[in-house]
Image (cartoon, rainbow, N blue to C red; front, side, top):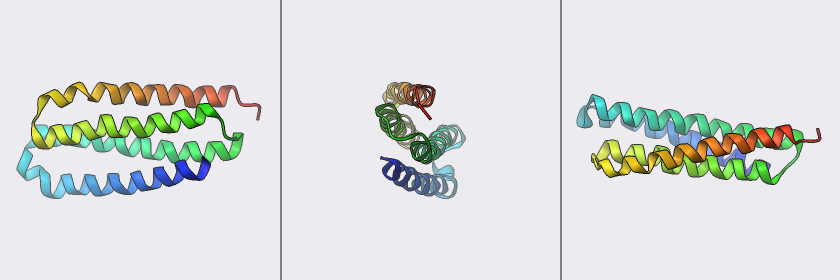
Length: 125
């Protein structure tokens, strides 16, 4: 679990840099200022939660693996897909109904942070 989430985090961080560069250099002139702001919000949350996965893996190395840490990591990954993914597609396509998916990703992020906290609080180390 520890190395798995760290690998996920590293891959997602690299992907967030690529997606961010794509937006800054190729998309901005095509989709406009408002849409690029939505896109950048997706990149920001993508990066934060990629780092969170790396931190989660390091934490598992310190306090031991647990189901709560496992679920926190899974929820961070789902959150990136739903929250950031929906914002990427929304900003590029303009399909407004995708905005209804974004809050589900936000809920996944919040739940992931709660599980992360519970894992640390309930740790015996």
